[in-house]
Image 1 (cartoon, rainbow, N blue to C red):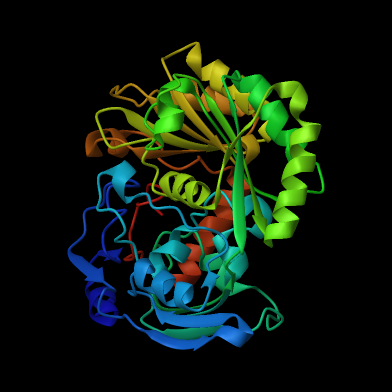
Image 2: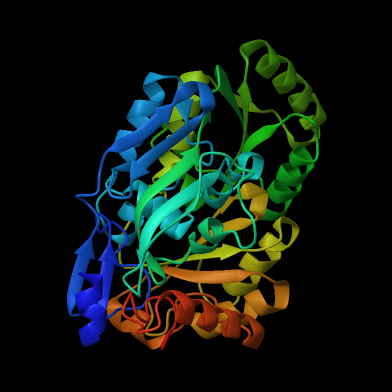
Length: 391
């Protein structure tokens, strides 16, 4: 298929299940190529903590198989489907790595690309390739697997991915503080992350966002929610929880979510259900945790905002009112002042066609990006322009 399209110069839209189809710049493609038939777990060795699966394998099928052996994808892939108007729980394992979208546990376990061991795929030259393998120490020269992670299907069509998995924690508890303003909440989260207690989740939800939670004891308070997750063996969790609460008692009395409540709370955040699909726009901004409240306050000077901070402030999901330009100029100006990267996740096609959806590239990075595109897809047929115009 790719060979025929390359010969005739036909642009291809590369998709998995289509759950993220409404993210990125709109494309005019002649052909849609889906990987959904490339499904199935080709290799799973629980004792070696490694799995290989077809790129079109539903993430849900992978996680069910892992859960049966008490294991998981430690980077906690986030589901952007519901927030962007797509289906919930439909994303494929190939799309997880193609977009490099990681959840709350990234602060402890690393990003999706850090767990990727190998890839099989087809580039825009219609060449089959295989890189990496089943262990981490198998790379000589460029680490192509990690380079392709986060390329959103613009460099190659992934057909199979091999990745490492980890044991599911025996116990989990979440410590919750209510009513803290953004700057104090991020101060608390950063302080907790600097302690030797292995915090695996650190989030802050403004009051307007916390009201969207399913947990009745949290949504009904009408207050912001600042939460820290501790996981591992039960005895270890109990000890670390007590010590962490003592170290943070200056911030007020903490509530606790038990193992079941904790799993439900973080699963809810994985689905981004607190940023539901609607007429408002959604930005994903990465920055230094300590500057995150200032960045949000800076944007708030130009427009109303609702913020959900993850990664102890290093990641901001920012909801803003719908406008013709998505507030792009103001948001990028504030991000430039405080440092970071901003991606427009939810907006109408006309808006996404008129603004830079992904963080604009500097001259040096743009040269590298164009060089990679030329090497992998010289005809420019794979998801052309989805990330950047004319690339």
